[in-house]
Image (cartoon, rainbow, N blue to C red; front, top):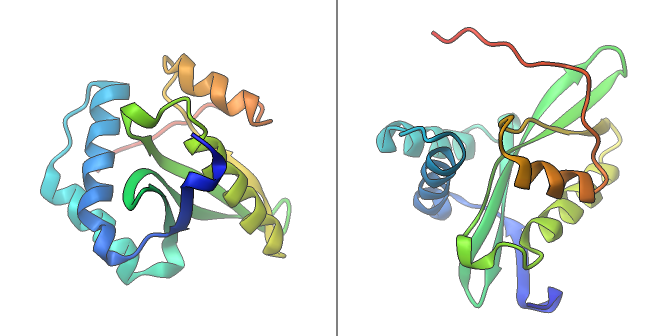
Length: 153
C-alpha cells in the first residue's frame, strides 16, 4: 500500500457507527473486554456534539474507513499547555502493517505542532500489547515512568 492510496480526514457524525464498531473490536482484541454497543455508540456520538472535548481522525482506502484514532486534551500547568492524548487507536486487521497508523500519527504530529498551545503527544497502551508498543516506539515515542491509576464509577 502506498501513502497516496490513504486519505486522512477528520471524522464526522456520519462515521459514528464505524468508530463505535472499531472501539468495540479494539477492546475485545487488546483486553478481551466486551463493551456495551449502545454505550459506545453514545460515547462516540457525544464527541461530535461536544467538539471541545476532542476529535477523531479516520483513514480511508478506496472509500472505506480502515483506521481511526481519537484525540482528547489535558491541561498541563507544568508546561502551560495542552497534551494531546491519542486514544481509541484501531486499524482493520487486513490493513495492519501497511502504514495506516504511521500515516495517522504523522497527521496528528503535524496538526499538534500547528497548535501553539499543544506541548506534546501522549497515549496509554495495555501493558501486554507489545505489538502496539513496538509501533509507538518506532514512531519516536518513549515510555514514561508514570503508571495510570483509576477509580471507576
